Image 1 (tube, rainbow, N blue to C red):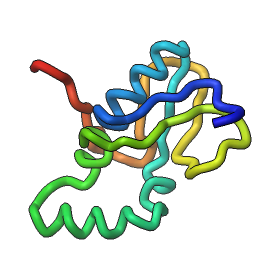
Image 2: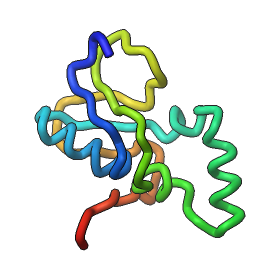
Image 3: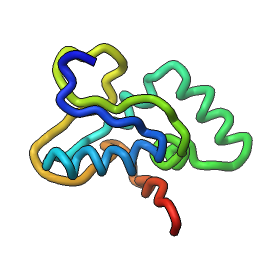
Length: 106
C-alpha cells in the first residue's frame, strides 16, 4: 500500500480498529454512511441483515473477522469510505445509531 500513512486490519471491526488507528495517529476518523452504502456488496449484506432481524450497521461497525485493511493516505487504491480530520475519536457520519465495536474479554 504505497502512499498509506496508517494501515490496520479490521479483524475486530471497523469501529474498534478505526478507533485504534485514530488514537495512535492523534486524529479523528470520519466514516461516511453514504459511501459505505454505495459499496456493491452492501445491498446484499443489508438484505441478509433484514432477513435475520439484525442491524446491518452493527455488522459493518462491530462485526469481527473482516480481514481487510483500513488505510489512511493520499491516492490509495481501494474504496474510500471517509476521511481523516483534525480531532480525536471516530464517527460514522449520517447514522443515528453508531455501533460500539468488538471488545475482547468483556
